[in-house]
Image (tube, rainbow, N blue to C red; front, side, top):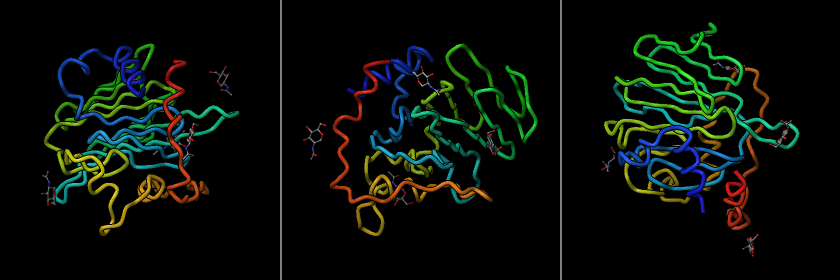
Length: 218
Ligand SMILES: *[C@@H]1O[C@H](CO)[C@@H](O)[C@H](O)[C@H]1NC(C)=O
Ligand SMILES: *[C@@H]1O[C@H](CO)[C@@H](O)[C@H](O)[C@H]1NC(C)=O
Ligand SMILES: *[C@@H]1O[C@H](CO)[C@@H](O)[C@H](O)[C@H]1NC(C)=O
Ligand SMILES: *[C@@H]1O[C@H](CO)[C@@H](O)[C@H](O)[C@H]1NC(C)=O
């Protein structure tokens, strides 16, 4: 069922995502709370704070991070901003403007190996050398593609990219971690941010069987 959204995004964004076999380098989030990790695991996390979607978690150097924040407006949940840090530069993508280190830039924008451009359907940030592409449809969906060299080296809601769904991401010292617990763990704590994480629920109460219904209407 969830395949609808991928086809939709892929068609509006770029057909290469379907055909060049990169699919397992892609992590995405869409709708009000859906996430798909690099390793193919789909889970629901309804948090409305800032969360680490994916980060380079190597010990030696950390080349990138992508944070997102959803917000609710009269019942519609969309992504309010996507903050992408590449080396020392921070790009903040919002619906109305893009900033680099706090300064508004006009698109297309090139700087230090990073290209930010937009089309009718999306904003795309590409850092070829670092090996990451971030796409946002300015509404609910973000896709991140990373180079294979980050296998087993990422952290965040996109998971560890070790090729094994559910392994490590959803384990903590041998105990199973719920998606809500995972999400809360990747919260980005900002100064003076009063945002509240969603409450931790007993997993058996979570019913996600209807979770893909929304796509059919796209
Ligand atoms: C919520 O979404 C509906 C359908 O897409 C749209 O018509 C409406 O204007 C949106 N409301 C807000 C407050 O964005
Ligand atoms: C990004 O933009 C949003 C919306 O304007 C703002 O709330 C947030 O603090 C900004 N984050 C950074 C890191 O610039
Ligand atoms: C991932 O990294 C861990 C810890 O460094 C290692 O034990 C594991 O074998 C690695 N897995 C893969 C698939 O590379
Ligand atoms: C989950 O939701 C579906 C449809 O909404 C329902 O048919 C099913 O019985 C529910 N399962 C549980 C365990 O609540």
